[in-house]
Image (cartoon, rainbow, N blue to C red; front, side, top):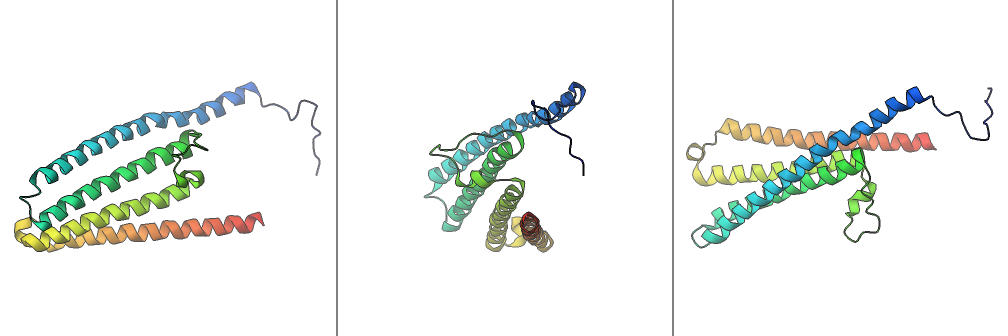
Amino acid sequence: MLVEPETRTGPHPPSPRLRALPMVIFGSRWLQLPLYLGLIIAQCVYIALFVKELWHLSWHALDLTEQQIMMSVLALIDVVMISNLLVMVIVGGYETFVSRLDLAGHPDEPEWLGHVNASVLKIKLAMAIIGISSIALLRTFIEAGNLGSDRAGFTEKGVMWQVLIHITFIASAIGIAFVDKLSDSGARRHAE
């Protein structure tokens, strides 16, 4: 195998015509910035929804039954979980696909951010979606059981579809984790 000797200035620099295209392609990652800013606005909408739900719960707490309070609290938890999902996508996605946040040493740096990559982000998102789906399914079961499926607007078929969708989320998360584990073990074997 012939190896071309390097000059004192290092390897041959790429031609100027080829440098512009990689720079444009690499710079295109900044096109995602408006998407992340939009998700921050969506986060503000969820804050307003949380405050509205909390105000309603606080204002009417003495007039509500225990189950109505539980449903309101589940709605608050649902908003928080969706908000957490937004934070993971905004922070993790920006760090992974756009630019580093340079938070090393900052006291509020999220622990998970140091080892986030596209695979970890997918698994975290899948787990958050399962959590959100679980809360929605629990609310459906409680509402359908309390009011009777006819009066609550729930049909047996509708609840069945919701359960099947939840099971699909779980199966998808297991599949993503399995493929990620296979990829990691393959990469480790290749590195050895």
